[in-house]
Structure formats: structure tokens, C-alpha cells
Amino acid sequence: MADASKTNPQGVERLGYLGLGLMGTPMTGRLLRAGHQVAVWNRSESKVAPLVAAGARRTATPRDMLANADIVFMCVTDAAAVEDVIFGPEGLAAASGAGKLVVDFSSIHPDAARDLAARLKDANGAGWIDAPVSGGTKGAEEGTLAIMAGGEAADIERARPYVLHMARRFTHMGPIGAGQTTKLCNQVIVGCAMAVLAEATRLASNAGIDAGRLPEALAGGFADSIPLQLFVPRMVQGIHAPPLGHIATMLKDLDTVADVAQATSTPVPMATLAGQIFRLAKAARGADADALEIYKLSAAARRADERP
Image (tube, rainbow, N blue to C red):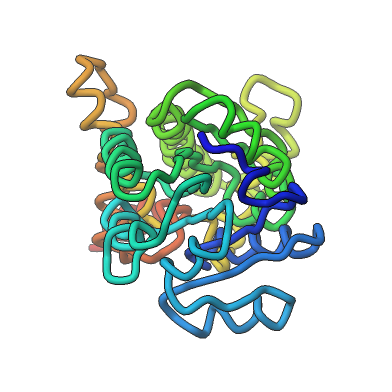
């Protein structure tokens, strides 16, 4: 990795953020409130304007951003979107990357992360950290995200002061791709938890007890967890805006789990079942619906059972 002090004699890193969606917007906001200068770019101008009003600097293209930033953060939908931002017209690869660092918060296949990092390094010399996040929009707004990272140790430490404005913990898990693999483990747990909590909440409701009191009743017991305390009230009250995450995103990650599991001869029966439940939810509720709307699947099943 090139010495950043040679790029910036004063040691002040210039920051950029690409992809201003549910996660990128609040994460960028936290960098701005911490006093950093941040250049921003997004495909749709409507998401750029509020951050520019808050002090961010608009850039015309990803290429322009890397040309004028030392560390570029990004969070986009999937591997195809990451590739387009890097290698598409006026992408990051078109700018000189010597001494620069790209930190990708997107959740993509570990193989894709390794491939994209190697190709970018060959194209312009930029370094890479794959750093998928967990904690949802609430964590992004409050700066309590858990971020799991893959990359060179020196690059991780270079990015750490900035990442910790956006996250509670930033854990180096190994070489490039390790962050993405760790995120898949996270999604096995979270995806299954969503499905199980929807099942328990619907059982409580159908049996005639106040499902909204489950978090209180189970607090401190073996069933207690952050998902229990956060997800169940939203399911019971029908709070789905802003979404904690889209059904399509969870399904994408669980499908990736299945692919990696096959490649590593790992049995994942629970994650596979959760993936199928989310596939049903996508068909019933739509790809962009809140992932917690899987709770509504059991309600639909009960109504079908009650039909004469």
C-alpha cells in the first residue's frame, strides 16, 4: 500500500461516499457531523441534494470522486452494481488509484469481492477492503453498526478512524473476501431469526395472547436477543417504513450462503429453509418490501385455512 502521507502531506484524508441508499445516506451524514469533508455520488440526484445541503460536495462521476479523494466508501445493491461503479463508463478504475483505498460496504459474494479487488488493483493500483455491515438503518443512523472486514492490516487501520464514526465495531477477519464470508454467517443467523420470530409472534397472536408483550416477557431469558426486541414490535405494529432491509436483499444473501455452502460442503438446512420463506415473501409482498413482512405470510395462510 502506498503511504497516504505522500498523497496528503498534512495527513488529512479526503473522503468520498458512493451509493446513497438506506445505509449510505445516514452513514455519510455521520461522517459530515464528525467534521469530515465528504464527496458524494449517486445515480439519482434526489438522494444527493440533501447531503450537499448538509455540507457534502457533489461529484459528477465515480472517476471524479477517486481522482479527488483518498478513501472512497461505497454501499450499493449487489455485485453487478459494484462492478458498474468500478468498471463502467467514468468508473473508479478510470482514475489513478495509487495510494488510494476503496472500502466496499456492499454485501456481495466473497469470490466477487476477491475478483473485483484484483481487477481494480491491476487497473489503477487502488487498495480494497470488503467491509459489509450489520445493524440495519437504525444502526446506520445511530453509528452502532457492526462491520466485518477483509483486506490488508495496514489498510484496515488506515480506514478505522473514519469507519468508527459510522460503526460501533470494525473487525478485521482476514484477507479480502473474509468480510463477505463473515457477513454470510451473520445473515444465516439474522435470516433464520426473522423467520423464527415471525413464527413465534404469529403463534402468540393466534393463541390469543398479546404478542406485543413477548419482548418484555422473554427479556433476560435464553430467548432474549436484539432481534427479539427490535423485530417483534415492528411485526406486531406493522411498522415497515423505513424498512430494516428489503426482502430481495435478504434473499440475495441467503442464496449466496447456499452457493458458498455447496462449494465448501457445508450443510445449511436452516438457512436453506429461511431462503425459501423469503422467496415466498418476495412473491407475495414484492422484492422491495421490508424483510419483516415475512410475518404476514402466516397471516395469509391462516385466512386461507378459515375460508369455507
